Image 1 (cartoon, rainbow, N blue to C red):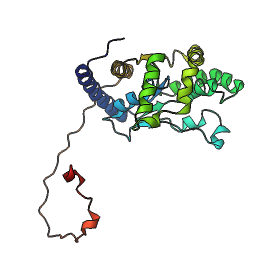
Image 2: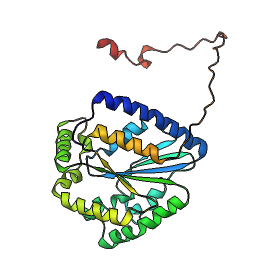
Image 3: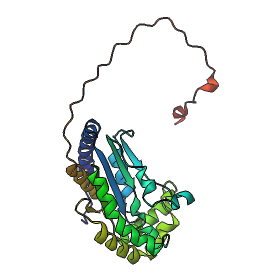
Image 4: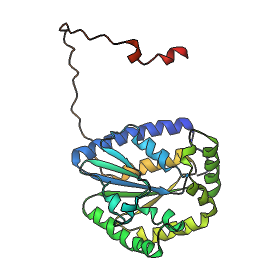
Length: 263
């Protein structure tokens, strides 16, 4: 996928898919389904921007984003999956994991943040853990976002040059350039051990972000067996006549200045 998807085509299809996501969310709420979607991949592969497009028109009380920070010392002493379990959905909820327990198979392993014993225990326990989730009725979808080394470096440079997006660039992100093959090896090993029939890995070619977003969202919708839910129409009542209530006066200092008028 080298040719960039035309902007007009992208925006039209994105809008159509986002309307379907709203329908899917209504089914999740009505049926009590529980959905977990895992977003993993290279640094700067476009996971966050895809999540943003998915959630743009969804209810944040139903569809939550879980993006956990670095574990605390207390969390480091817990069972590895424990802090992620707290993020799992209840009935009628969707959780989008912007990175997940797979941190251990990627950055923690490559950067030496975990021991070899912890790493191999993760590869052994994760299929067991995920089978438990699926057997309990959770719909678990796992997506790996791929991008070339050339495109990744271009995105790093773009972030570094943009003060509005520089916060997206961390020292670990930059180091991923020097450890490209290490991350490739770690990803391939992870897939071998955790691509199970109950919870398959699906790869998203995100060299072109427009194509990648459209392809991922369309695939997500195809994997969830939702039906259209008839929603009760809401009638907006007529406003009753005033009963004579007078609001107390407030000073100008309590009003936000009209900055727009100066533009």
